[in-house]
Length: 230
Image 1: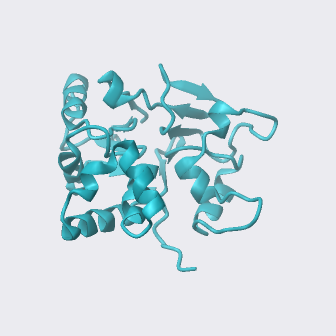
Image 2: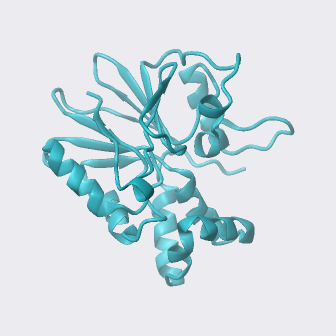
Image 3: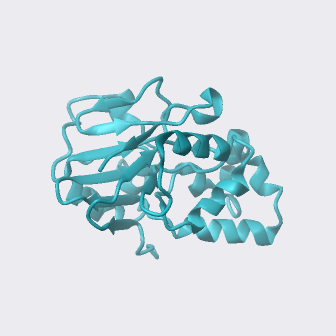
């Protein structure tokens, strides 16, 4: 299996940089900029990290994709970006994607689809930042492994297939276990201070162990949760 080498990305910023995190944007470009304006976000000095699902459902998808070209914007891959990558060659993924807000993508030219899928394939599945005071992680959907360093190692293996075992890669994009099916297998994730996730819509941000779920349903609620993390 050919595993991309960009699945885990560790970022460092200059001292004093304000780093913010935003939940699933889902094509709501205008709402994002309204919220950043309220916060007084400085586009020359501040950094915004997205927990994935930049596109679909909202109608400003192409505008949202332009965010990838800005130096102040960083993001991890969500399951909706993954569907853009896979749906071009997998009919079942394409059908699921279309049912979940992805129709716009398949209405584009083949060339546009290819360009967008290429951009998304270059996104990491996990981002880590070290502020000097604390270490913060960003994963789209779920974390089942309670050791951050082991999680990173497993994600680097890609979406492997072993009967009865879900890869950390797949769980990071699609899982909901810690939030919806909490059990003895979950605990504080060691070797990391905080982890921010999206994917599952919550009425208000929810903390479970040291994991923070921040997808407040942008397209449906016309709200985005943005928080300064360092």
